[in-house]
Amino acid sequence: MARVLVVDDAAFMRKMVSDALASGGHEIVGEAGDGAEAVVRYQELRPEVTTLDITMPEKDGLEALREIMALDPGARIVMCSALGQESKVLESIKLGAKDFVVKPFQTDRVLGAVEKALA
Amino acid sequence: MSSESPILRLSASTTEAIERALHKHSADGIQRGAVHVRADAAEAVAGLALPAVAADVSYVDGVTGGNVFLLPIEGARRLAAAMKGTDPDAVAEGGKLDDLELSAVGEAMNQMMSAAALATSSVLGQDVEIAPPQIRVIEAEADAVELLHSGGSAHIVTADYTVLGAASRLIQLVPNAFVVRMTRALDELTQEYTSAPLSDSLRAVPVRVWAELGRARMMVGASLGVATGSVLELDREVDEPIDLYVDGMRFATGRLLVADDGSLQFEVEAVTGLRPGAVAAEQPESPQPATETMEV
Image (cartoon, rainbow over the protein chains, first blue to last red):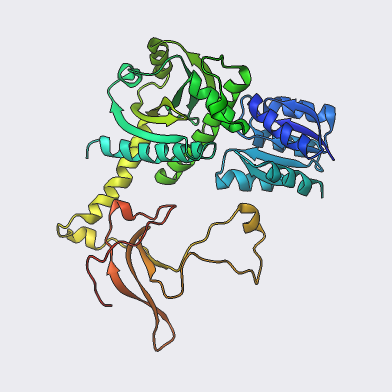
């Protein structure tokens, strides 16, 4: 069971991720629709796990990841993005993300990624 | 070479990538139709089923162009149902599109265009970045034309799809920079394949040659976990021929030999030749029939 912040610019995707996590018993403590909001919400909520989309307006997910890791080097972040580009995946992991889930995803895959991040 | 061929080559990689992305939401509800190069925006939108949800994704990094996917309301609602994991056929006809369904279509478009950008990156050999989708409902052809004008001087290609029974259209605004790069790539390929004798100056151009034993695909997570002693399974049986590549294009198939001095040699069994279709693509094609054999 973890307190999770869900970040995606598509309301539909926030709902899909939230529903998947709730089905695994996790608590959704907040949502954000772009990278800038994600950084603000992270500081307010200090979630145990954050899921982060990459392609978003204002500030993209990689920039948000960089800023959150700078604020809290212990942050547990799971990237959840349609972008399968190898450079994005590797960059995310180098920046400190715990896992990379490619959309569209299966519920088990998201739950597995969150559990791995918590381990 | 006319500009049509590189445009169609680029378009083909985009339309196929989008079809694959749509298939993830509905394995049997997606069909791909005709592809046309269009003279202008008015021609590109003619005959659209309206009203439709328009999802507009542009390229970033200073390239003018992008893609617009137009999906009639009914199709949008069925696609959203499929994405939620519910039965698309259970969607009542004539209903209104709600915000969550609109957001679902935007997300589907984001996934489609991410797949397309990846495909374009791989054909052009350069990274292609996209912006988040802009979603709106288009009521009239004139509104759709206006949407396309933001694409500037890009080339226009349309591709029709049937999405869960709804006649939909992808309108590609192909940036001129992509066409120039693709033209160069195709020129390099076709030059090699002309049967005309090579000029002396070309004969002296060095090329890279390598033999490929097999390929494997893995997730990046797994690749980071590869350690000394790890065993990867390749897509090739021990008695299958291996491929010889010349500057990135598969040129021949053959077998490995060991010379008396212990060095490895490649014995050519079949020359497939340099053709555009033989390019070292992400999906290796099935072996071509032998056109000619030679011994080395």
